[in-house]
Image (tube, rainbow, N blue to C red; front, side):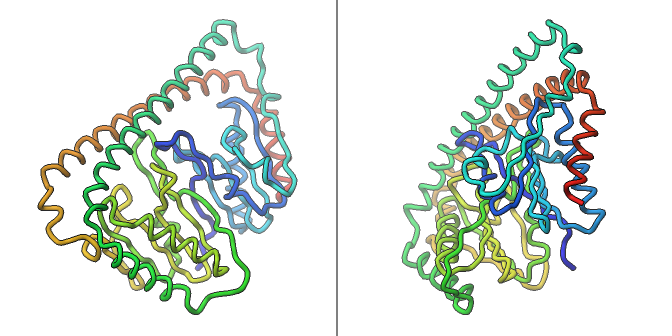
Amino acid sequence: MIEQSSHYFARGNTALGAHFLYQSAFSGLNTIFVLNGPPGTGKSTVIRSLADSLLKRGQHVQHFHSPLRSEELDGIIATELKVGIVEGQVCEGISESHAGDIIYIDFVEALDNSRISSEQQATIEELRGKLADAYTDAYDTFLSALRIHDEWEKYYIERMDFTKADDIMQQLIHDLFAEHTNDTPTTGRHLFFGAATPKGPFDFIQSLTAQLDRRIFIKGRPGSGKSTLLKKLASTAEKKGIDVQVYHCGFDPNSLDMLIFPKLSTAIFDSTAPHEYFPDRDGDEILDMYTLTIPPGTDEAYATELSAIQARYSAKMKEATSHLALAEAIDSQLKAIYTAATNFSIVEKFRLELQNVME
């Protein structure tokens, strides 16, 4: 049975700031509708309603979730129709590269500014400043956590058998691609399977891999070559013309956490905290980079140092999450002001217009 929906993130709250992958995620579409307007004016509600309508009609829908509230949607793609709908504040990069039509819908039209008092306007400006500060604090703290993570990785990088790691890589390349090469290079599609949210890390690994025949769970320690392995596999797949979905790390977007090869019905992913899973069905296997490439006893030899680093890292990650929780609370206050001033009959008109386009 083929799943009727797919779930991803295409923006993240990362150690490198707000990071957007919509340019890649929405490439190849015929039409993209960009919904502009302040928070609370019904954009996410309309996107959710359209997704539900498409699903009821048997259409496949790709859902792009908000990293601030994972239950809310930043955008969707109606796969068969090749139509995307996205929140205007998160679709950085789309307009520069999209070859199809981009249609902007301004939800500001639904906003009755007479319902916003001068005092509320002052509150809005204050809240916007506090929201920007909360995000800055979150990103700065994530960056501090990344620097600590670099310390953690160093213990394993310095002891890694790179020859063995390269052998593993070459064996995987042969195993996965030997019978599936064509002459036309491909370009991978870049996404996030998870995100740092105000409630902590959240991911869609299980749903994204549920229909695949083969899943390779990479185990290991920080710095044991997991992301490097995935980058090499992704690059090789593109050169060999094999379709690949490239999933970036929601904490450090320069790192990779998963690859899916749809036509090979195969996924290979970093299965360590905070997205640690274990084989539970036929076709699942473990690739343990620690036991294969790091000298035995490394964990034990540096147990004290590694424990201290891990504690500092965990504390910074919790602190960063608390800043995201503050950002969500501030954003909720902003949304409440705008929602109270929104004429939802106009929002409904926009929804019906979009629904008609998708029928």
